[in-house]
Every structure is written in structure tokens, then in C-alpha cells.
Image 1 (cartoon, one colour):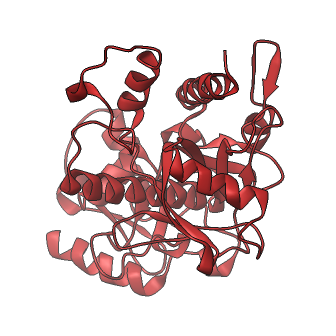
Image 2: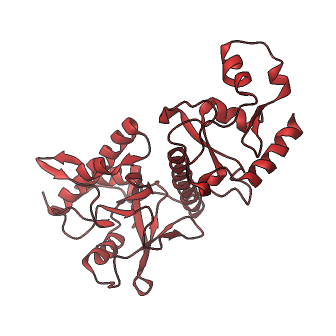
Image 3: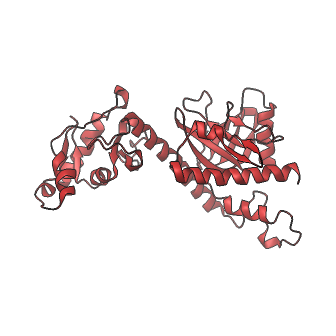
Length: 320
């Protein structure tokens, strides 16, 4: 088996391993787990290392993953189609790591992208592809739309076949029968997923993994609720525009069954207070009416923005 095939097998196994780990741990994975990686044929494969552009020792030229760390000194961003604009390492466009990204583009090789949503916790997206190289500006463009996996596996399954029909062959980008509209839509959706997950992790972390209304502290049952909805212009994914809520209180907040006034007091809609039902209604909703938020972020800049709360509370009163 050639070195190319070895690396191809490792990438496939890395994708499978990430799928397994996200089923166990959720969308966001701890850094130490990614650094430890997995063992394949007696060799440990680390998915993430000290450098943002990470190439295991047994790989020849092309990296396995690229990473944006929390508070990164590099100006990684997104273009208007949702693609990641990823910064080179250093200032030399011909540094081996940067050359590796260029070769990945030329050979349509899939990579893994890790977005650091907080210190020690990373959101993986795979497979991603380098679609444009810009050495003059020390950066490249990365497609993060997650639409290539089936085609990549199909290409792998036919790697040694001499009878592949032209109709079924992946094109130069490794996918089959794609359309520009679908590409742009998928890229935007992937960007939304990245930022929504990052927002959730930062909000829940700021609230010390508690629901601010009932103090429930099971992370898997917590959401980050927007005070100003993200569909509105001022609905930025910043912690001060979020509340850490358990799923039932998140749903109740979104449906204006309850509201939060600018003084951090919880209010339950009048008709709900008059209902008679089981213990969930009594203790889960009616029982928190008039209480203050139990947990708020310790950093002042992360606390619920009072102007946003006031605007949202006015809508709640309008429904009530």
C-alpha cells in the first residue's frame, strides 16, 4: 500500500473516530481527547497539536487538521458565502505547513477544522477543503459546509477500480453532481452551526453550567437562549445577549410563557399562573414567578444586557 493510501485510510478513520466521540461527548470535544487521538495499526494518531496547522509525523506533506484557537492571534474570518478564511502560519508563504495547505487544495484532500469555542474545548467540522490559495495575503479559503463525506467515501471505495463510469466519477473537488446554489447554502448553514455551538458553549460556561432559572446543572440539558433573537440585526452571538436555560425554560422563554425584566426578575404569564395542572407546571413554571435569576456570570461584561432585556420584556408584556 502506498503512502497516499495509508494517509487516506488514516483520514477516513479520523472522520469515523470524530463521529464516535461526538456521539459520546456532544458536538464540542475536550482538547486533551483530541491530542490523545486514536491508535491505528499500532500507531497513535494525534488529531491536534501545538501548531494550528497539524500534520502527524507519519504524514508526508499534507496536514490532517487546522485549528482556530480561542483568542487566536491570527485573523481567521469568513467570506460572504460562509467559507472560512484561514491564516497561514507565520509570514513565509513557503513554510512547509503553508505549502501543505496548498498541496491539499491542489489534490482536493479533506482536512478537519477545529474551532476553539473556549479554552480547552473545540468544535470539529469535517471534512473541509481548501478551495482557494492566497499567498500574497498569507491566507487560504476553506469550505466548511460538510457536504463532501459521502462522495469522499465513494471515491475511496473505487480507488483501485478501473471500470468507474464517467457519470459516477467525483469531479476535481471530490463531489458528485453538486450545484452552486447548494454549495453556498451548505456553507452558510455550516457557518451558522459553528457560531451557534460556540455561542452555546460560551454562555453555558459563563453561567457555570447552570440553568439561571432553576439551577439545573446538567450541561446536556442546557441551552443558550438569545435575549434578542439572532434573526434580528442586534441579535449578536455574544454572552451578554444570552441566558443559560434548561430546555423547558428555554422553550417557555422563546414562546413568551415567561419573561425576564431588566432587574433580572422572572415573570410568568398571567394565564399560566391561573392554570391547574401537574407538578411540572406548579414547580417548574408557577413556582419561579417573581424570583430573581439564580446564577449570573461573574464578569460584568457577560451579564445579561439590561437594554436587551427591557426590549424583550416589552414584547413579553405585549403577549401577556
